[in-house]
Length: 189
Image (cartoon, rainbow, N blue to C red):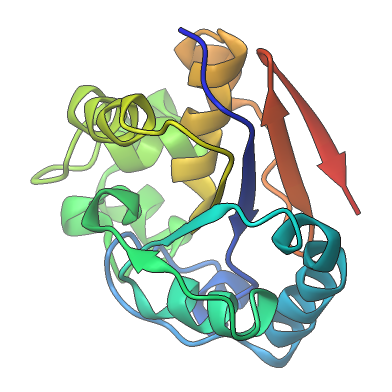
């Protein structure tokens, strides 16, 4: 599939990111470092926003907070499909707590994308990817997306034609912008 140019911003570090706690669709505010991440993104966004792209943001607070900093006064549309993977019973737990309470699931899924999608009562990978693909197929113009780490891994993987294992192994940086176009990505720092 041929998608328009997309600039993907992962939200800045949150208090729970700093604690190693699984957020999923629960809320945690940006940490001071997370605010710096969003400010770094704001510095990179000026020439992109000058092109007049459509802007979409996850409804979750950490993405909204990042967007208000990184996009300045640029208007954006909140889209529920941009929410992070729903990680079921793992939400609110640290990775260590998941390892202690669900040792078999934890041992079988060392990477976050696989672990979150294996969570009991969670969304699961297929539904998560379908939600992201549904959003992507509706795009017809260059677009800025402010969302989440795992969401971005799947987005980047779909656009770049990666397998699920390759998606799960992608780096997940904050404070940068992933520019996606013609089946490849470039990291803007």
